[in-house]
Image (cartoon, rainbow, N blue to C red; front, side, top):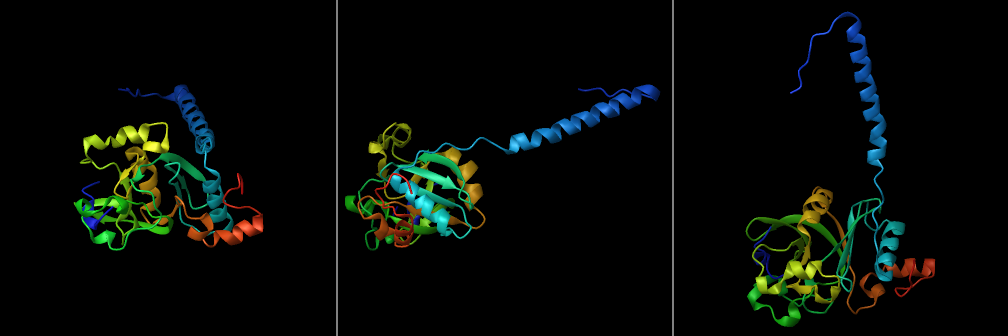
Length: 244
């Protein structure tokens, strides 16, 4: 969080065979090829990812899928209260659920002008992760580090824990803890596990970007996502419902 300058981150020997011995080798190779081909579908049908979204996160994901609000792009649903992020592909298939670190301050709005400030100039109440629907794309931050910009104007991005993060903040320990109570520590940016960022998030968002839906701390869900109101009325649910 802060100005774009805020982030300093991110031997087998082959014998000669003739006559009757040649045919069995070809047949063996053919069987091996067929076996490999038969194994491909099994490898492709990986076990579904287990996710455990909150009622609000489930409702938002249901709305996005039903309405096509993601416009055929991959998307993320970030639940700030649970400090948890779920990644979906463009067809709404969940690919991963990961813990996150978010802004240390409660709040759903970015303070005016916060994007032009240096990190050291941010007040405690300004270190928020704003709620809303964002079109996110990869770009560069200070130090030529690529990050996934969520809200460029207010310098909010998704990236791994910065290498130069203060040790006293214990960001890694916070991310690995079993409770979300200690996951508020950043200046507003969204920290995610490095392996997840590099192997799943980046490949999916790198080419054309995608959408990030950040759930609110205190605002009504329908206020942050107005189009969700139509979905809720159509399906007879509210943000407090356990299922969409």
